[in-house]
Length: 388
Length: 225
Image 1 (cartoon, rainbow over the protein chains, first blue to last red):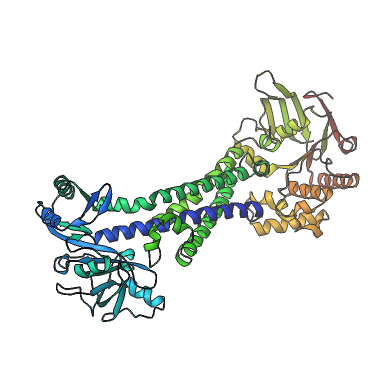
Image 2 (image 1 turned 90 degrees about the vertical axis):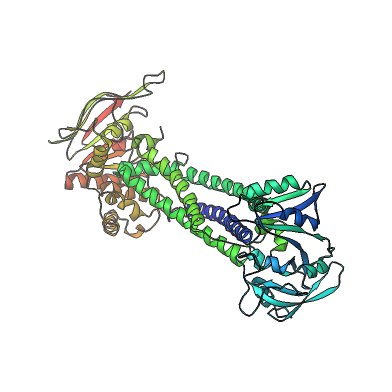
């Protein structure tokens, strides 16, 4: 293998590029899927929105009562949410909730407040809890304002004025998107920041009773509220993943094209298509090498090449994604979502991905190398050498 | 004299019964004596190379036998034929078939590797063999960096590494000049006289045919005299 430098380097480069591309896409895809799942796990079972003419509009507060009357429901609470600039150009999600109701939901995002702080209370105004990621991000960016319990953070409202909030707690979240993005406050303060009137909310969050049929409850709500859009957890997950799923598919298709090119390169270099490789097998057979010896040589060669290419590719993808932040690729895959990912793109490496990439790099290269060699090795040496 | 290899009513037909069927070798019965250089002459296309391939167990006859001692190898499995090539036969090919990416020593060591000789040992023996052919200054050169005559010496050295009973050489002077051809003759004659090596060579060159102790002529797949 090391003797055929040009051929080996060409295959190695192509393999490295194709596996790096696949790994980069997979690390982002897995990261986002895990983060979306984590964020949904910390969210409500159902979200009720109002649509007019296909557009989402504010929900009248009297819907809360209508929703509450549906059987199988444990808790209904209105939410007011939107985006606000904390003054440094980054958009943060601000969510106003009814502190008393929301605070009773075990595991709901924002309620896992770190020691030294607390969740917002019923009579709190202009108090907030912020994600731990926001604290880290602000500290890392060298912002003038230190984010901690007791400090004050100003948010720019819908009409351009500033409102000061006192931070009463810092929450931990499994979801990176939530941790680096979310500020929770009381519903009245959120209305002031986002310009939402007192009779409306952005949507209604619903938790169902344990053991109730989620789809059954969703169906009841959909039937009783003609302008409602009911989003179940699965629907939310699909919606969130669809925004970049197709692009991940295109990237995967691109990877498949590159891999096919690699295989054609390997096949051409090692098959009957390569006069040199064919003659070499014929010569080794003529000199007394068994078919098994030749297959062993070719297998070791292709596995070494495939494993090296895959490992270089995986290493390159780790550097590209985790250190460089996947420039271009992250923008392509995540689209406008990237604007909201203040803490950087969510990334994850799983053993399944690594094994898949290793198998995808090694097995086809091995087959493309070994099968033509085997075919030549079982042919009479005279035929192979003379090419008749 | 002892017979090294014998053929009986040997046929090799290409084109398997179709309109393009060619009998490359037709009913050839010969005996190759041990410790002799036997040369097969004849024009191009007369079947010399095919006969060498049949004797060298590189291809199977359509009909007839190839016997080493009393053992007929024509019907044996490829495993036995490969083993026989490994242990009994050395080849000098018309096109040499050296592996260009390997050095002279590595090329020559190849036959030893399939005899399970460790690589370092095989390369040591290969270096000794090459040095005996005056190639000690070119041991680590890639074959692409060697002259035609030097490549031919590498090819000769490789053919002798497994201490064969028979050396089969097809147009051994095809890619070398007259001086190199004379050197090749000298080496072969020395091996024949010192080691009782059997040599079967094919050529259409009168100079090479004159090296032989015994000469056969082929025409249209037959031995004619």
